Image (tube, rainbow over all chains, first blue to last red; front, side, top):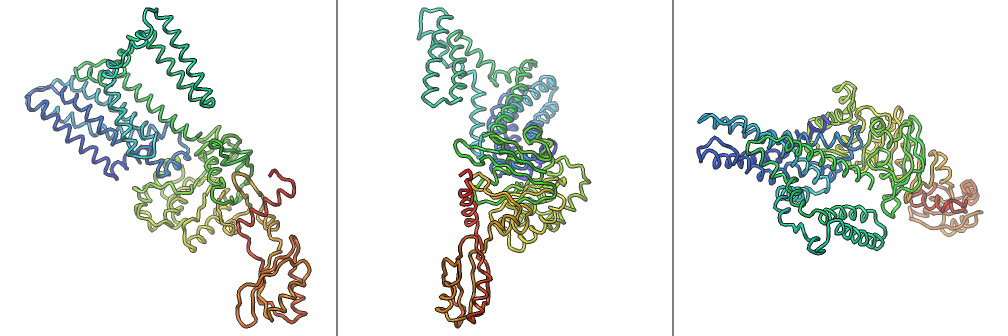
Length: 292
Length: 317
């Protein structure tokens, strides 16, 4: 793990990517800081911290796009996967290296706070809370980016996928608001929730069974079908819950709390677990490739 | 020591490796011979734990690669078909990275220095791998496999892309390494495997077609029933004489090498040796043999013979 971490950090600085990432982050955050704090003559920095998340959506994919895709393409993964190191060690090593780059980037916000303190005393606790929030959301974004880069051999494809995934995570609340949560209720009106759910699930089972036999008994159909049954069951039983669930999963909503100066442990844990889940999924992807 | 039992790897319906078993003892150099796409690299990738087998077992020093991958991998040095090199590192950085990656306990500087002098890359030690030629990249790949002094070396076509001088150097090096390592080496060049290996496993379309020591195998293969002879004498008479020899099936006339000097390609009956008779009858007729050699077997010939042999003796085919 240590070896991989050191190599990754080195490679960020022997290729242009590390410099581009840092330079872009410093430049955009400086614009944001100037327009949100300096020009308004305020000691508050929440405007900048809110904008930074959007900057991250663009910049994190650049940081993580080559992590695993390039290894696969250049076949250097043969060297890592045949060394006496676990897959977890490889993935975590790479994650920590990207995270170090990220910390180098966002540390600049603390310097901005020092700049403000030259004019008036800023609210250090709030700024520190903002910083921790940014640190956590970035960790989760990096985990998502690394996961995306494990899916393909192509850096550009990897960057595009993670870009789309990050936008989706950012927009979850909006998506949840737009989805017609009560569509099954409207299809089967005047019925109680239990009966509605039973009918929906029965239809699901029927469709899955037909698909299963048409496609030649593929296991994937069963797994996909099971997920579809869970989702449709939720819609049928308690459709009004759907927007709430999206809301709870939204990275933006979770992060917004930090920028208001609220340190909510559940939000912090959410980002930590999101990072852990995506790193775990990355390990599974690598493991699956071995068995393919 | 390496033990492989009933190893198979299926990609969908395609059987890349189909029920192969073999053994390589300590200090043995095992040659893995087969045409491109025979399943050599797949087998090596399974042995090193890069991919998993569909069924069967692979053991390194008694440790199953699937049951305890870390312990098994620590015993292996692997040079894949394409050396896994990071182009943005110098040789020094790269070997140090591998040293850390393998959690090597040997004294760092002396160990890396020894390896570099062994594969002769000291003078490119501080250069970027990106700027090295193919031959040097191959050597750095070999150096990488040697880091940590593993018991087992698995080398996938180690001489591909090298010039003749480098090929000889690498072969000598592998022979030297074979004294205190178990080496598995793959190649599609017969002479290479013959020159280096103690034991040969011939593989084709995912199956083992022969597993034997080199001597036995060449005995099985070199039946001397195809000869190329250069004889001085009138062409018509020589041909007549050759066709008169017992067991000769066919005589072809090859290139002309001077006044009354011709090359003849003689095919005798399977399993017969006509060299002595050929000599005495030339003497009787007053012809001079300037050169006589058994026609070289190509890899294709070997496969044809081995697979034909199997079908005759009622093999699996």
